[in-house]
Image (cartoon, rainbow, N blue to C red):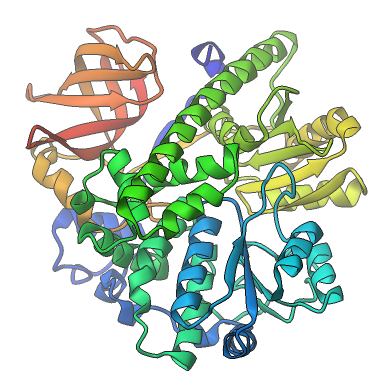
Length: 571
């Protein structure tokens, strides 16, 4: 069905990533290929390549941290019950786990995690969750990766006499909850330079400052495996500070000093610990951990991360893997239904530039993934809606670079007050809640607002390439160099190259992936795979591809493999 709709969106164009004209001495100590790649990603000095902990930004410039340390220190001193409230995704789960482990290591005897169910309490610090924490005996609530928009929950906590510390990284609105302390690098005028820090990173910074006050000898680097996982899984830009956190966490995993739960999840995914890179955290552990929050509750994911028993952690990881398989099946069913809907729309007119889809049978926990898939396929802002247990409609939005989705929702809210019950998010992703009878109205308003914002013209998708790899560079040695050169990820993208090849053989594997044998101009044979593409090619055709050069290991032998990002015929 997807291939029948591919003409909805103009085909992407392959654009060469510009390489700045800098002095030959800049990064001259590096291999030429790495120098070229790093310069194109904004690296200008050897210092930016240093990924040791001494290069981390200091927590002292993070606003609100002194007040938060004071509150936590007092709570620990008087042995108060501390409730940690996290988000139900990988960032929130890892942040919650770090807080539980560190606060207990600092002497906390009454530390309990409260991660809400997306199906009952929803996102954030809900008043009902505050009541649960108070009934447990909490005197202090610490939010992680959430809370900056939880006005009602904070008000309820203050009403009950509970202190509240908010740690978050999401963009705030025009007003702030009346918490006792707020630690968020994205507050207006906050001097902290790490604006891209994930929720787990913000929590880590607060705990580092607390450790300095209470127990300076506590080794905070021992928790960086969790920080790395949450940072990569949340898709925050990997600026220099985040690359340090991720690299140090990867080193813990590679040397088998990580949490048993992380090791178990990697074992289930058949990823050897010593070869782990950032993409393994993003695409192997992250989805399995997130599956708990999407289909059930994040309690199982958190339990796996906290478990000190390797055998028990492996059993929990297996359950998470089963949930992720179930999630994939649900996602595929929803995607098929969405493509059928789009086919009907295409028969009656043009697909809107702002695409909003709703189905009464769709699963609330999977709409974010479906929105991402549709955004990638059709290169336009997408909102996917599904019914929730409380009778409202939940929506998940994903956007393209040309449309700041949260600002777009602010514009809709200002022009149509009351249409949106709740919303929040970032430039590229957002969540929202509607009344059930508002779906059609919102769908039309969203389409019209995006159309106006884009002046009626859909921007062409672009594949950013790092240029052509010489035939002599397409080998296992180069693939190994690129694999371990740096934590690649959001905002510091893995290298993508382009080139022309001739198809020698092809087959469909797993019913959805295209496996190719390619020949370059000098007759060299290469293996390639195009994931989620099941459209056979003419076996004699010449193709141009954009690809990543990966290192494939099979039966102890390493070989280069091309992971195709884009394909187009040249004959």
